[in-house]
Length: 463
RNA sequence: UCCUCGAUAGCUCAACGGUAGAGCACCCGGCUGUUAACCGGGUGGUUGUUGGUUCGAAUCCAACUCGGGGAGCCA
Image 1 (spheres, rainbow, N blue to C red):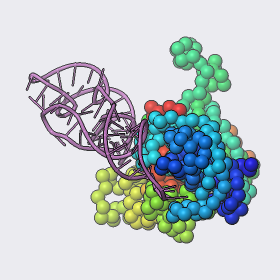
Image 2: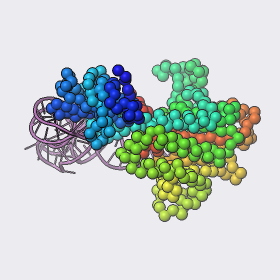
Image 3: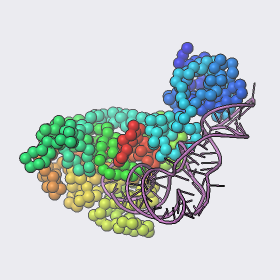
Image 4: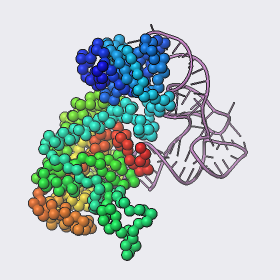
């Protein structure tokens, strides 16, 4: 007996109609009358369920009729046309075998659950419609990102998860150590003696692969990283997680305009790819999660992203009729309310804000000719906010060293990074895309905890 | 970390100082084409934790824990 995936039946029904075959999967719901019933079977291969019809000609009809949700079944039967309105065909069961019984107290009911409740059963929620769609889309989007870069001859770099420098400047880090916290070795001055630690120095989980990606960029010309990233910030928002995935391309012989063009092309490519390769999931998000989703994504694909300088943005915000809680002043960082106003009210589409004051940006960003701003860019999107942060990197060694001095950084900690400028440095640029934020944008899901399979946030590492 | 709202049955919620309730789930029964099936009956509670006010607290007060929204940090 041929075992067939539900996905194959839906994709190519003519090949299976009136054929006898076997399927296996989990019960989503059972509806029974006295002598017959229906099983909605999900086999994990496809977003939609296969409707199975069974009747009391089966020897185990009584048992099947009372099976609890989530029971695993193997079913042999014939694919036939369905008189029902909601599905063109169904499986007429000739044999139903219980592979793994479930229990009546199965927490996932056949009703709408709150996302908050589903978070408490993260091990079961991928079986729900919403999370089935979210995590299948996440997989498709990840593949789209690899395809985009591989098709353009980018080299995929696995930058280290454990980093030896605690000076990457992107906030609090998680310490990696094998020292016993109850018996820390001390040096002469009473400080913790990290020379006795595993690596002989302080180490942490990475907050960004950028510095290492730059090294590979100046060897391979076009590279990208795509991996987990860790921030120990005590953030408690729908947009932050302690462990998340970041995509960081880095391109040589390129400036900020090339960087923005790459970001825009990549985002449009991934959107298009997902719409084409996960249409059932995208349709689901549009119907049940975010009604305006599909038109909005189509609009993004078909329009040019906005570009505005930081200075122009400040002028626009000062002219805005809207009252802001935080004052708008050149030199101050844009607040979330300002970013939302720009992308949601003025542009109503993704917009790059570029050329920020150097004081509010990282040391490695290239100083502009005005000596006041750096070649940085943030991409803001409606509903999510900052989704990409990037810059052209400072390739001029004396300028970079001057900036590092201003920022109080120790050259010894960056000796290899400075070497990159010393030996054939070129202009280059790159950016970081928050993968989860991109997924949020594509699905309409409003909380980052609901696009991560097992989210790690402050006070939460269950599962 | 700050501001704010919340926590009552497995889930979603009501009861607003005076006997804890509904829908769904679950259990039992009915139903020959269902679509979150439908119809009838039933089980189900230390009202987040600790303390306080009161004759009496789910209800008022305090602290703590957890969750939502907003802010900061950022992706």
